[in-house]
Amino acid sequence: MLQYIDTQKKELCCGCRACEQICHVHAIIMKEDEEGFLYPHLNMNLCTQCGLCEKVCPISEPILVSSEIANMQVYAAMTRDVELRKKSSSGGLFSEIASVILHAEGGVYGAAFDREFRLKHVGVFSEKELDRLRGSKYLQSDTGTTFSQVRDLLRQGKSVYYTGTPCQIAGLKKFLRREYENLFTSDLACHGVPSQKIFFAYKDYLEHKNVGRISSFNFRDLDGWGPAINIRLERRNKTVVVADSYYLFSPYLYAFLNGYLNRPVCYSCPYARSGRVGDITLADFWGVRRFFLLWM
Image (cartoon, rainbow, N blue to C red):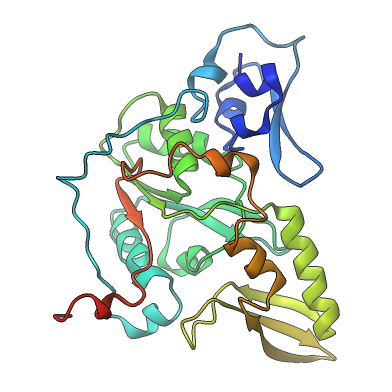
C-alpha cells in the first residue's frame, strides 16, 4: 500500500496520478486538499492489496539516476526561428524537438490551460495545436489520464514526447514498468509547484485589480524577456494587454520564486539532483553570454 495512504504525510506524494491510473479496480481516486493539491484516497472495499500503487509511486520508490555527470552533455542553444523564439521559453528547444515527433506522426504531451485556466497535461498531434503547450506555467498541472494514453500510443508503435516536472516524468516511467525506445522525455529544472487553487486566487486578484476578465495569461513578459506576468484582458468590449509588476512586486511571482507556495514534497524532492530522470532537461540559459565569449 502507498506510504502516503498509510501515513498521511504529504511530503510522500507528488500528485502524479500514477497510482490512480495503474489501479485495475479503480480503488484510488485523487481529491484536492485544503491548499488545492491532489492526493490519493483509497477505497478499501475495492482494494485487492496487489501492491501496484506502491510499485509505481515515484516518491515511495524513486528513480535515482546516478549523480555521476562526467558523461552528461550540456548545451546552450536556441531555435533559429525568431518568431518561434518570441513565443517560447528556454530558447524554443521544446518546439524543435516536438516538431520532429509530430512529423513522424507521433504525439507530444505537455501542460496547457483550458478555457477555465485549469492547467492540464494534454496530447497534441499537429503543429497547429503545439502553441497550447509553449511557454512556462508556474503551477502544478494535472496529468489526468495521460499516462494511460501514452502507454496505448507506445504499444501501437507511435513515438511520444512527454514533458513535465521530474516527478511527473518519473511517475510516467514507473507507470509504464518497462523501457520503450519510442518514448522521449524532457524534465524541467523545476523550482517547485504551487496549486491550481492559489493560482485561481491570484487570477481573481488580477481581474479585480485591472477591472476586466482575463482571456490569456503568460507567466513571462516575452517582449522584455523577463520574469513579469503578461495578461490579455477583456474590458468593456475592448481587449487590452497588461503587464503585472516585476517579480519583486508581483505577489504570486515573489511568493513562487521564494518557495512559499510549493507542494510539501517539493521541499524534499528526490529529483532535485544532478542525475536527471528525463532524457533531456530543459532550463534557461539567461546571461550565458557573460560566461562564454564565443556564441553562435
